[in-house]
Image: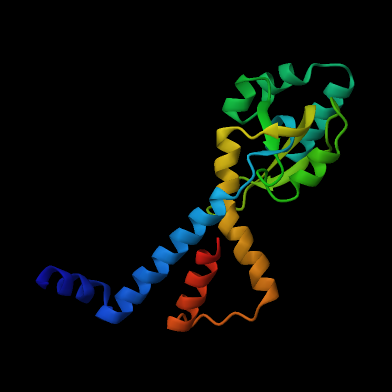
Length: 193
Protein backbone atom coordinates (compact mmCIF):
# COMPACT_ATOMS: atom_id res chain seq x y z
CA UNK A 1 0.00 0.00 0.00
CA UNK A 2 2.83 2.36 0.86
CA UNK A 3 4.56 1.73 -2.49
CA UNK A 4 1.27 2.34 -4.33
CA UNK A 5 0.71 5.60 -2.42
CA UNK A 6 4.25 6.72 -3.30
CA UNK A 7 3.65 5.95 -6.96
CA UNK A 8 0.45 8.02 -6.93
CA UNK A 9 2.34 10.91 -5.32
CA UNK A 10 5.07 10.71 -7.97
CA UNK A 11 2.60 10.86 -10.85
CA UNK A 12 0.40 13.38 -9.03
CA UNK A 13 -2.86 11.45 -9.37
CA UNK A 14 -5.48 10.40 -6.86
CA UNK A 15 -6.44 6.75 -6.53
CA UNK A 16 -9.67 7.25 -8.50
CA UNK A 17 -7.89 9.24 -11.26
CA UNK A 18 -5.28 6.52 -11.59
CA UNK A 19 -7.92 3.78 -11.70
CA UNK A 20 -9.83 5.72 -14.37
CA UNK A 21 -6.61 6.13 -16.38
CA UNK A 22 -5.76 2.42 -16.16
CA UNK A 23 -9.36 1.47 -17.00
CA UNK A 24 -9.26 3.68 -20.09
CA UNK A 25 -5.87 2.28 -21.08
CA UNK A 26 -7.14 -1.29 -20.76
CA UNK A 27 -10.22 -0.47 -22.85
CA UNK A 28 -7.99 1.07 -25.51
CA UNK A 29 -5.87 -2.09 -25.57
CA UNK A 30 -8.98 -4.26 -25.86
CA UNK A 31 -10.35 -2.09 -28.68
CA UNK A 32 -6.97 -2.19 -30.47
CA UNK A 33 -6.87 -6.00 -30.21
CA UNK A 34 -10.50 -6.26 -31.33
CA UNK A 35 -9.90 -4.13 -34.42
CA UNK A 36 -6.53 -5.74 -35.22
CA UNK A 37 -8.13 -9.20 -35.22
CA UNK A 38 -10.55 -8.00 -37.89
CA UNK A 39 -7.97 -6.68 -40.34
CA UNK A 40 -8.31 -8.75 -43.53
CA UNK A 41 -5.38 -11.06 -44.26
CA UNK A 42 -6.09 -11.20 -48.00
CA UNK A 43 -6.26 -8.05 -50.12
CA UNK A 44 -5.52 -6.44 -53.46
CA UNK A 45 -1.76 -5.85 -53.64
CA UNK A 46 1.04 -4.58 -55.83
CA UNK A 47 4.66 -5.75 -55.97
CA UNK A 48 6.49 -2.50 -55.38
CA UNK A 49 9.99 -1.37 -56.33
CA UNK A 50 11.36 1.96 -55.12
CA UNK A 51 14.33 4.26 -55.58
CA UNK A 52 14.87 6.94 -52.90
CA UNK A 53 16.96 10.06 -53.60
CA UNK A 54 17.54 13.43 -51.95
CA UNK A 55 16.14 15.88 -54.51
CA UNK A 56 13.43 16.15 -57.09
CA UNK A 57 16.10 16.84 -59.70
CA UNK A 58 17.92 13.60 -58.79
CA UNK A 59 14.67 11.68 -59.17
CA UNK A 60 14.00 13.29 -62.55
CA UNK A 61 17.53 12.41 -63.71
CA UNK A 62 17.06 8.76 -62.67
CA UNK A 63 13.70 8.64 -64.41
CA UNK A 64 15.29 9.96 -67.63
CA UNK A 65 17.97 7.26 -67.38
CA UNK A 66 15.26 4.62 -66.93
CA UNK A 67 13.33 5.96 -69.93
CA UNK A 68 16.58 5.72 -71.94
CA UNK A 69 16.64 1.99 -71.25
CA UNK A 70 18.62 1.51 -68.03
CA UNK A 71 17.36 -1.24 -65.72
CA UNK A 72 15.35 -0.03 -62.69
CA UNK A 73 17.00 -2.59 -60.38
CA UNK A 74 20.50 -1.54 -61.46
CA UNK A 75 19.61 2.12 -60.92
CA UNK A 76 18.26 1.33 -57.45
CA UNK A 77 21.44 -0.51 -56.47
CA UNK A 78 23.51 2.41 -57.75
CA UNK A 79 21.71 5.45 -56.30
CA UNK A 80 18.97 4.58 -53.80
CA UNK A 81 19.39 6.04 -50.31
CA UNK A 82 17.30 3.22 -48.85
CA UNK A 83 19.98 0.65 -48.07
CA UNK A 84 17.65 -2.33 -47.71
CA UNK A 85 15.65 -1.89 -50.90
CA UNK A 86 18.64 -0.47 -52.75
CA UNK A 87 20.62 -3.68 -52.20
CA UNK A 88 17.61 -5.63 -53.46
CA UNK A 89 17.34 -3.62 -56.67
CA UNK A 90 14.56 -1.49 -55.23
CA UNK A 91 12.35 -4.47 -54.35
CA UNK A 92 10.02 -3.55 -51.46
CA UNK A 93 7.86 -6.64 -51.78
CA UNK A 94 4.11 -6.98 -51.97
CA UNK A 95 2.06 -4.10 -50.52
CA UNK A 96 -1.68 -3.83 -49.83
CA UNK A 97 -3.45 -0.48 -49.65
CA UNK A 98 -2.89 1.48 -46.45
CA UNK A 99 0.74 0.55 -45.74
CA UNK A 100 2.56 3.21 -47.77
CA UNK A 101 2.84 6.90 -46.83
CA UNK A 102 -0.23 9.04 -47.41
CA UNK A 103 -1.04 9.59 -51.08
CA UNK A 104 1.18 6.79 -52.41
CA UNK A 105 -1.64 4.24 -52.70
CA UNK A 106 -3.39 6.24 -55.39
CA UNK A 107 -0.13 6.50 -57.35
CA UNK A 108 1.01 2.88 -57.15
CA UNK A 109 -2.36 1.22 -57.57
CA UNK A 110 -2.92 3.27 -60.74
CA UNK A 111 0.51 2.55 -62.25
CA UNK A 112 0.75 0.26 -65.24
CA UNK A 113 2.98 -2.75 -64.66
CA UNK A 114 6.68 -1.94 -65.27
CA UNK A 115 5.98 1.79 -65.58
CA UNK A 116 7.74 4.28 -63.27
CA UNK A 117 5.94 7.05 -61.41
CA UNK A 118 6.74 10.72 -61.48
CA UNK A 119 8.94 11.72 -58.51
CA UNK A 120 6.99 11.51 -55.25
CA UNK A 121 8.01 13.59 -52.26
CA UNK A 122 7.57 12.47 -48.67
CA UNK A 123 8.85 13.39 -45.23
CA UNK A 124 11.77 11.20 -44.16
CA UNK A 125 10.45 11.02 -40.60
CA UNK A 126 7.34 13.15 -39.92
CA UNK A 127 7.80 12.91 -36.16
CA UNK A 128 11.38 14.20 -35.98
CA UNK A 129 12.22 16.03 -39.19
CA UNK A 130 10.88 18.17 -42.01
CA UNK A 131 13.41 16.75 -44.51
CA UNK A 132 11.77 15.79 -47.79
CA UNK A 133 13.08 12.88 -49.84
CA UNK A 134 11.91 11.86 -53.30
CA UNK A 135 11.25 8.45 -54.71
CA UNK A 136 10.41 6.74 -57.96
CA UNK A 137 7.93 3.91 -57.71
CA UNK A 138 7.50 0.95 -60.04
CA UNK A 139 4.98 -1.89 -59.89
CA UNK A 140 6.15 -5.21 -61.32
CA UNK A 141 3.04 -7.28 -60.52
CA UNK A 142 -0.54 -6.86 -59.35
CA UNK A 143 -2.83 -9.28 -57.55
CA UNK A 144 -6.56 -8.83 -56.93
CA UNK A 145 -6.47 -11.06 -53.83
CA UNK A 146 -3.25 -12.16 -52.19
CA UNK A 147 -2.28 -13.20 -48.65
CA UNK A 148 -0.72 -10.20 -46.88
CA UNK A 149 2.86 -10.73 -45.69
CA UNK A 150 3.59 -10.36 -41.97
CA UNK A 151 5.25 -6.91 -41.95
CA UNK A 152 2.57 -5.11 -43.99
CA UNK A 153 -0.11 -6.92 -41.98
CA UNK A 154 1.38 -5.60 -38.73
CA UNK A 155 1.37 -2.07 -40.17
CA UNK A 156 -2.32 -2.43 -41.09
CA UNK A 157 -3.13 -3.79 -37.63
CA UNK A 158 -1.33 -0.92 -35.95
CA UNK A 159 -3.27 1.57 -38.08
CA UNK A 160 -6.65 -0.09 -37.43
CA UNK A 161 -7.39 1.81 -34.20
CA UNK A 162 -6.12 5.10 -35.62
CA UNK A 163 -8.35 4.70 -38.70
CA UNK A 164 -11.38 3.71 -36.61
CA UNK A 165 -10.93 6.71 -34.30
CA UNK A 166 -10.60 9.03 -37.29
CA UNK A 167 -13.74 7.66 -38.95
CA UNK A 168 -15.76 7.76 -35.74
CA UNK A 169 -14.47 11.24 -34.90
CA UNK A 170 -16.04 12.59 -38.07
CA UNK A 171 -19.41 11.07 -37.17
CA UNK A 172 -19.65 12.25 -33.58
CA UNK A 173 -19.20 15.27 -31.41
CA UNK A 174 -16.29 14.32 -29.21
CA UNK A 175 -16.48 14.91 -25.46
CA UNK A 176 -13.21 13.92 -23.82
CA UNK A 177 -14.73 13.55 -20.36
CA UNK A 178 -14.50 9.79 -19.95
CA UNK A 179 -16.95 8.62 -17.31
CA UNK A 180 -18.82 5.50 -16.22
CA UNK A 181 -21.50 6.01 -18.88
CA UNK A 182 -18.89 6.06 -21.66
CA UNK A 183 -17.17 3.10 -20.07
CA UNK A 184 -20.45 1.15 -20.08
CA UNK A 185 -21.05 2.02 -23.76
CA UNK A 186 -17.54 0.86 -24.78
CA UNK A 187 -17.96 -2.38 -22.87
CA UNK A 188 -21.37 -2.90 -24.47
CA UNK A 189 -19.90 -2.36 -27.96
CA UNK A 190 -17.06 -4.80 -27.27
CA UNK A 191 -19.46 -7.36 -25.83
CA UNK A 192 -21.68 -7.30 -28.95
CA UNK A 193 -19.06 -9.18 -30.95
